[in-house]
Image 1 (cartoon, rainbow, N blue to C red):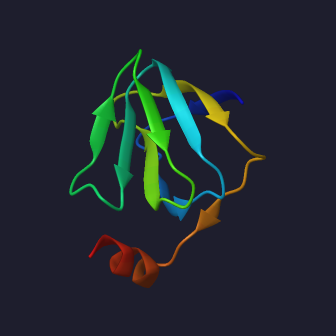
Image 2: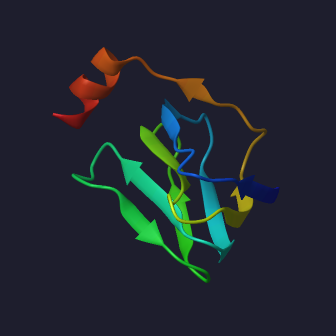
Amino acid sequence: MGPLDVEGPHPVIEWHDHSFTHAAFVLDGIFVNESQFDQTELYFGPGNFVCGPKGQIMRHGASPEQDCHCYFLTDQPFSLHYLDQETVAKARH
């Protein structure tokens, strides 16, 4: 666990998954999140707690208007697996 600073404008990390359960507590700015189950980006401000289960396909980052600072919590060591568009399309349908 530790700080996660996402600097703008809109540096959304492309579609990926993690091999651990994780959460971000938004300290300031706007955190943008979209998962394989969402039909649109969701926006979370300071004080929000955003969770992601192990293996869920997602993308997230700061809003176009400002940087975002979060506290990032995990239940295992950090790993990030980027996914190709075909894998994402299959998971989202």
